[in-house]
Length: 358
Image (cartoon, rainbow, N blue to C red):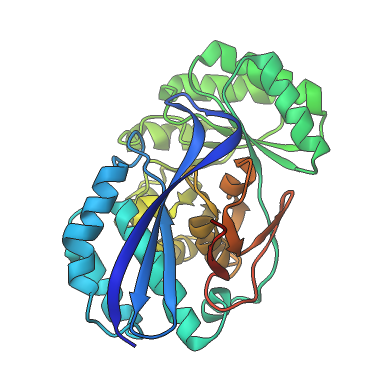
């Protein structure tokens, strides 16, 4: 079965409410859908969101990388040669992690469809369900508390709280959320590089003393400041997760060597797809570190790919794959079922997604 063409389509999926972090605010999830077409009946689907402020990848750069470099490198190759195709993909263009992730996902989807098996089975999984947290966007304390209460009513047992824009107000935000939801739900903080090292430790100590029972904190300091991250990790009362500091397995290795974090957050759009994600997870297992599997603001196709791998790896103990849950509609046919916090992988071949509804 020969790869004959690649096609792209741009979707904009409205969100239930604006998504706000310390760095951006959006009200629509953009998805660049990639289809790898063959000379047979099967095709592979992948997708990537343009997140210029995070990955540097825009809609224009993703489509240009695909059209100018990636597609010419892969067209004419055997679709069954997954490892060879992934190696060609990696060499086709420098950087462009989101474009590479979209095609990596499509190649895996196509390969699993050729085998007529769900992708999780080819990863050695059992198709087990996993549970995700839900993101509480960065807003005023009262609004965040109301959003958290609604999330708990909807069945979520873990809340990912965006902080990092104002350290003193962050203390108030977390206090308001904890008071509103009670002691049951887990609170995971995501500072998005918003604090300084000593400031982070001061805040986390204060939250611990106040009884806020924070489960973990993501990327408390600047991504490049591994020394600062190591300081926070050594002094924090809660586990530290490296997110923006870890894009590739090489980054993960440096974080583990310097003991700069307790866990790493694997995101397909950062690392360029499932192949590199597997390498990062394997490194974490070697160093005895934890793995959080996360996502950008992503639609069901790329989230489905993450679900298939995360559900097949026991080292992945923290799940943050709520992108599709933040959307007001689902334009895709098939795929994993998102039932509140529970995500049930599809048993259909590949990702289990047949296409879009319109």
